[in-house]
Image (tube, rainbow, N blue to C red):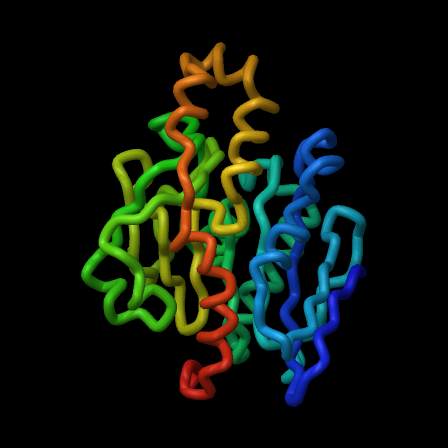
Length: 253
């Protein structure tokens, strides 16, 4: 378990559940999912602990020291139901009984939706990749995490599966023409986003290049995708904002 420790008063733990690995060449040059999530954190009183799920590292007990959890993306599919994925699902269900914040990214988002009774599967619109726009709903204005979100913002995506059916009680906070569930609040302190707030211009360009041949076969033009890549300023602040929201003692009542 890799740790990044920041010294400060009332230190709390942010766990990164690393449920996948990026492409080897991308990893060599830019790092991996957990590195990118950690790079988004600016708070100095947070202990960041990465749990490498694929390597069998144990899931943390639900103690009072856990401030929150970020569940990363993955190149796996939720529908494959790997044993490690099912174990994280069960942890999510147990976590809903505790004051623990959770942010699911891409695969993590789909996993939360499935764990809580929804359905995640291949998106009938096919693959979505590159810089896209996300539209926020009116409900987002009342949400503690997304109340400062623009009405429309840019975000980076790469996925084939989505949350197709929401679990009971979940609320849509953002969408686009490809995916009706780009942002979902699953419960108090639990959110999922289909886009990647940890992806910057370098990372999404690398993903387009790594998948070049597959994208061409799917009818995409990698050149056009790269021309449309843009800065995603608001999206890149989301993980930091998630931590700030979790610091609000009133979040869980």
